[in-house]
Length: 400
Image 1 (cartoon, rainbow, N blue to C red):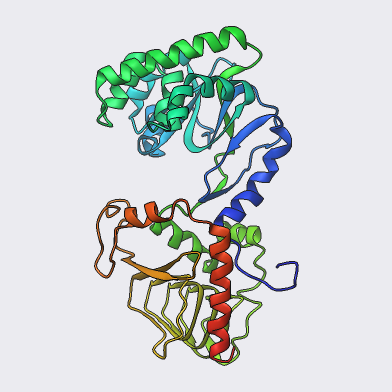
Image 2: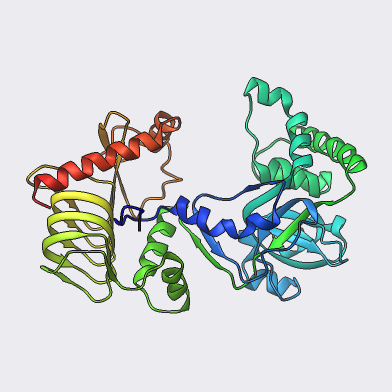
């Protein structure tokens, strides 16, 4: 609900800001970085004082990290945080390795106390941030190069050189390049710890092995977790509670529409049509809607909207007589610029966006990568304002 009494869907980013705010009080003087496309609700305490200059969030398992636990939990498929059993709380990171390889790589920790998948979100002290900025001052000033936190910061800071080289070779990085980078990070680390011994270097923040974790970063996860709103069960109940969903029909005017009892319809207006089972809809306005089961329709306005089974429609606006039409499994989104011009991007729920990132999918004029490059400096606030104006204009044109 907005201040003016109207309602509109909360974005994933807004939900992340809401959720991560619980960590603010315990992170004074630190920079916290969270994924903008995943939401987690911790079951472990979230107000503990930092003990390390870098701490990374993870879901630590309660069981000892035996080979069986490693395999049963599928830890070989994740970036994993391992915490020393010595009581220091020191941690290290490895990525997608089996138990035996992890034990070898993590020998610097001694006995491994607990392990679990990394969430990727982290916080750093002002001191280590300053040290990193100074170390990479040349690259920052030249705006040259690309470094990622996991492979280029956390792993070389916590793994032995040979193990780091071995792990990076799996990513196609030459041994000499990895060796040189590890030596650079080790030199920085040694100088930093000599001058800053008040905290450990790298630790873990456990969110709890039973934490709720809803990831929207891939199409299959976006659909899974949006459709979870329509499901039954503890995880679905908690998701609805987090988003403030108290009914499957909220702030909507759809009395002339036949809506399946399992569907979720939020802030929608329609005069006729039908909504199938396990549909998630938000901010949709149309004279007529025909929405197939397991479809997701968000921020769409048209005279008529037809969405096939499992289709995903996002930010679409049409004033045409035929309206918006999507077949089973279609994914159609609109990309709007500051002038209000829009282009449609099409895909299928069966297509992996990562694998197809550089390809021009049938029905599109550009690849996903090209569209990303064209819009990475876009003024999203101005675009959102313009999109809302276009939405209202279209909705008014057909009497809603």
